[in-house]
Length: 248
Image 1 (cartoon, rainbow, N blue to C red):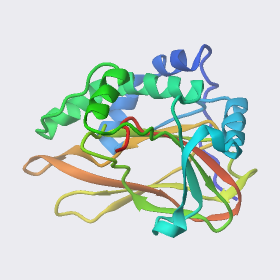
Image 2: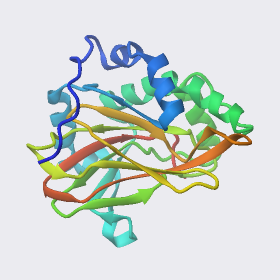
Image 3: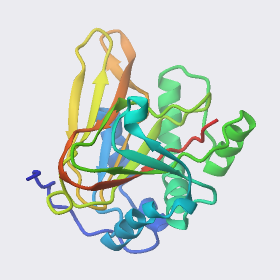
Image 4: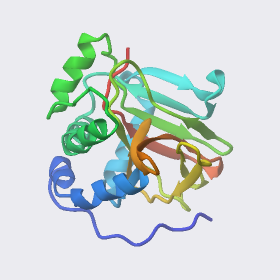
């Protein structure tokens, strides 16, 4: 059976946008700076997780279905939502973007990268659309026994927001076994390190899409990250992925 995640406080009251705004963002930003990822316990209640997972069966909500084995991505499948996004997904995407934009801009400056991100996601998506990136990227992923997701980066075009989020919609130990969220980080002149991130139903993990600044021996260096999911031993696992740039 999976090792349970540490006990956490109950989810904050209010709308999803209010819950995101009420998070301890100084602490989360410090964790993202230190580790490249941060866990948000119990972001969504069980009923929201169940409703999102059940929506996977409604093909009208999605623009594209991907069978991972056909592309060498692993085993399992996922579907990209179509616009307009479900209200909960839209709200979470906008709220997380607004909270993460200041950190994203600080990382860009530290890495000496020219792009800066506007305050709202609507402004950023307008920039994406002008560059030909107009396809929505939030997605639902579904894994069964024996499925896994190879280490990868979600890069879809010229404009890339440097952070993304995933929300586990299923309960480890009840709905599935195995299927841990995994991150690898490669720093210059060092061996790669691996993090296995324990999540419970409704927990979110925010993590770097591609690269992040780290303190090296000669100043700021670029660490390159990839993420994936280990093989499920049993059951079925659903995840909501929130990517903040659109695809071409």
